[in-house]
Image (cartoon, rainbow, N blue to C red; front, top):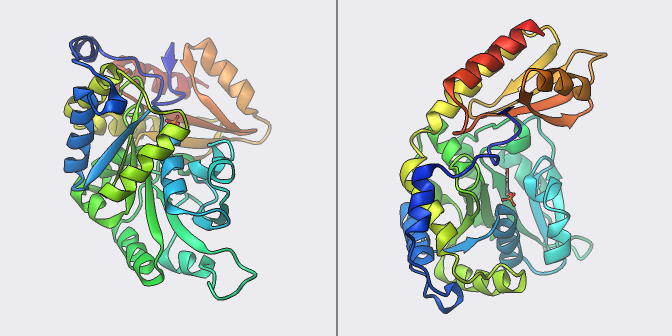
Length: 338
Ligand SMILES: *Cc1c(COP(=O)(O)O)cnc(C)c1O
């Protein structure tokens, strides 16, 4: 099967597995797991941030960040498409008792002016305290859209002006940096906290890292414990993260080229109405009227290709490191015959 459902379906490569097998480990909660310590130090220094926290998932790193930034009753400004709002089980309410102010836009990016409209007057007792601005780069439900870095910088200034926290859900930040050419330190300098996923395009089987200043990460350690994310000999999986950061960042441009090829093939496919491609490793497209997503997926499956339904007439394709050149060629050929 050619699996285009998600970049989370990858399996550890033989090199990664070997590196995991050789990991020296210890009790992470005692601060004694050398691989976890190395991964945290390596990612913090990569982004020029003070400290880092290794967690089982990107949902956990985001939720810890929101919890640390807010108090019950506070409000978080984010896109209506945001993963923290759409796909984290209502965690903003469940974990932080916070509400959300949702910005509508085509691809999940927005402007400084959009944000400013949603900042509540702290002296108006009818309104929730606005506490945090959250952005996602790349935007998952925005077809892998990449933010304009200058806009992100302007939003930083706005946050400073109003005393708001600024969190980046960077589940696919390395895809964004591959597309925009920015360096990790540039992102590290903009945000109060950043979540990166090792289990997406970077190909580790599990794991995410939360970055922030020392005090923030100390708070995060406590919240991670409460959420049940404090692991013991996690070095075996942290080793996969180290391997991923060392070996699987540069090759992301291949995934982007492959996605661009598939986007082109989709443009020519007679069953496709509209293709959204954000220039990274993801494509979301709608089908012509009368064509159901489930029906299209069945046709693809008959040709040995898996994809993800995102709506009654919309589908997502994602490219990743377990797809070969032949897989991409075949996918494009199949789309041409439909
Ligand atoms: C995958 C993803 C996450 C984290 O998801 P987990 O499955 O919990 O690791 C967070 N944000 C975005 C945008 C994602 O795509």
